[in-house]
Length: 245
Image (cartoon, rainbow, N blue to C red; front, side, top):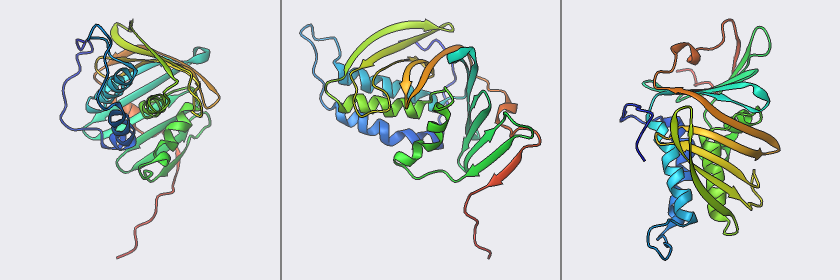
């Protein structure tokens, strides 16, 4: 599929995001193994569909972008990413999460002054999704959470997967409708990803939270101010202190 977003190719990866989803993506791609094809020799099977969308989703980790979304209830959310320096921010009504190689900063912006807490990046594994799961609880789903759900679908042979294409915010996107999941954060969901890897839409119930997220605008130039802490915020740093020399 042609890249309609037109985002510049950037050799440097978003390290913190890659660490959060690399193990999920690696496991998913490994599980696809040698792929079976249908009688006509061209249609991909469910494993290939899941693996291809996971790989497509990771493409955005190599690019700066700013995406705006309409969320359930008519509220707005944003996802912004820079590669130099590597950092990303997830903003939703009442709060935001800023992630960079030095840690995760979660802020409650519904109060004045805003309250922010800085924590060290979690080790790879299930704990790596902790900050992103908190964002999901506010109605904004993120790429690491989607990657985890795609892996869950790959592990469960009873899951049904159907593919289709759509256009959202002027961008062509590949979509998968997944159903029949058990023992997962979502029993089913529909996810769409643009050719450049930006999450275009997501619909489903994740961890008991109704997610209805649709891209309304995307650009290759995230505003610098979105990466700054709220003005006058009270900040508590929970990261381990380095021992005195």
